[in-house]
Length: 103
Length: 480
Image 1 (cartoon, rainbow over the protein chains, first blue to last red):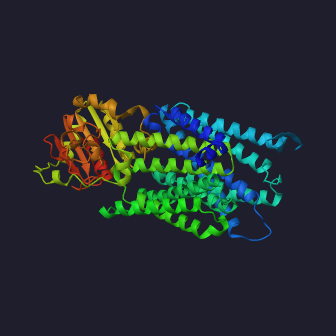
Image 2: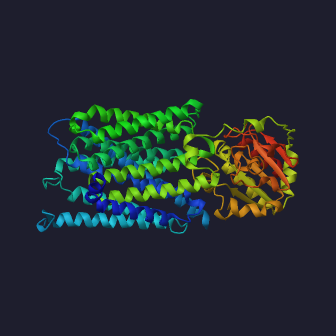
Image 3: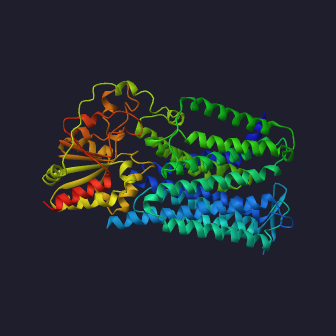
């Protein structure tokens, strides 16, 4: 019963998950070994999408009182940004290096 | 502009709400498209930029258009705080990514993965008190986000420590059981929190306890793993961070977060499986850290003697060869010998020798480690050959130079069923006409297995730090 209830309540999300798994597998199949590191690092940056959660959290935080959760929320945002910006920047740098070599 | 334009499931929605969801759809598509382009050499850089663009779009529209449950947008003061935090994170992330030495790349990827895990962990921790008691679904995803995020965070920090040489491998037989116990406690506590009828605000102690034990599990889980298993773990942790972000996406019913997270989770899992396949090992045996146990019996056998080679002899041998294959391993990275190795290959190419690098899929400490390292030293992409392509050609190779690699050339993978690496695909250095092995000393490889290649009749050892050995060799060849 609980399982069926859970499925119905979250059916859209479960659909997304099921399809995303296949998309994820499909998209990176046959990736050459030379791209393993940049691919991992680029995917890592995408997992920084958690930053949206951080924006929502801090965006709607109550600022009238100082709270531990506000501080932790700000940390979540900083960490998320590090993951996103650092991740994309480092991937770009790696790929730039590969490109230069190909000439 | 933000007027109500319709009603869905009894909730009014506005132009802004609709635009926000549309921007998430575009962001999600850009993630997929970016990742697709990232998996082909010619388009990889563009793909990375597309994905980054999708992320930027989702961040901006969330800040401008997101509303809380009461329909209130993000107040201006909060916008400034968010922007300040993003500014700090961007500045640090950008600067470190640009300034860091290329050789420290694996460490950096681990650190960024850790921060992603930490962000998911914190978001889940802070959202937990807002959950409604008895709402199993939302509490479940919150707990999963917290636990997986925490494991990814502390695990990646340990992985960083290992890559940076700050943390050693600690493997005691009892740790397998201890880890199992910690895992069971983590799961039990999670289940307890999920099914508890208490209000989440009364369960704060439990959530902090769960956080603590998850962090400990992350540490204990990565601690015993070393050597050739490192690429597997790094890519597994990467996958976990994605899954944690997706779980947090559930909390906000945010499709871009769910899709982005799961996409990374699935892609990371495939890469993990690829790495496992490259070692002929199952993921479970990597996680349980069963390496280094069984091979003890084989080590006791007759070892034969190793023969050293003089630099001048090595120089002559290399100069008069036609075909040379260099097999790099982690030792090359440790000694930072990639630049001097390239100098050696250019010098030899100048003498008309054909020099290629043979890259084992799990050489180094992260997927594709050797490729990044050699690319940094300007070794042309075409000179890096994958294991399966070089092996058929090995019998025609005059000299195989093994630099700081061990297990990936150990013929025990073929001959010795009792060896822990039996069945793992290796680069067939033993088939080459001559073999030169550069090594610091007679220590065993990471897996702690005796390597009979060292005692092969065709093998000559060149002891010493890879960097200084190669530079001496380069000077020797130049002075010929």
